[in-house]
Length: 241
Image (spheres, rainbow, N blue to C red):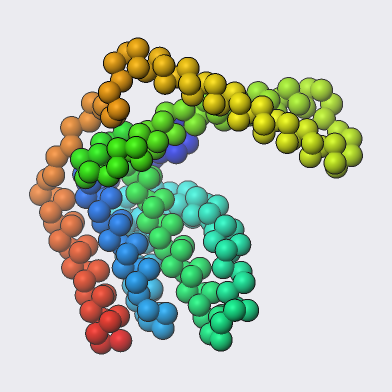
């Protein structure tokens, strides 16, 4: 099982790839805040946000199809949450469309961040920014061992299919439920073994990487220009509306 399906394009050499992970994380966070705080009726602002993230995607040289595919995977969950909004408010349809557009723009920025940043470097940057250590370690473990979990699921699926998985719908649902329970127990037990092994090797509660983080002149230029665009958009949205 290949374990680079999360950040498979992070080894690129584009302008966006070479930025410091902390710069990209803070820029993404600022972009998400700007998008979520923009009032409903400022559709021109959302067009500018889309143009901005599109330019960054093109500069990153990450395949556009990959970005769109990853972003659309999340959208069904957004639609599931927002589908009842048009029936609850007078301007529900406008609010529904705004939620969908905002969510998609935020997801695009997050997918771009993950596609252009090595996960270990990003985790080190998050720890440097003083994010809760527990959160950073959970993300670190997820990245390191999610492919092990996927391997386990694939083995269980292969074992199920080799036993002529068929029968009534109810029987299939019961089998899948048992598989889910077995997977939970195996994951818990393996997690305990991994944690004990890490403690025996000197684990101290924080991640260690060989990446050397460092702000460069390009980070300053990018941060200032990106922040200026978001500031002007905020002035337009809340001032000149």
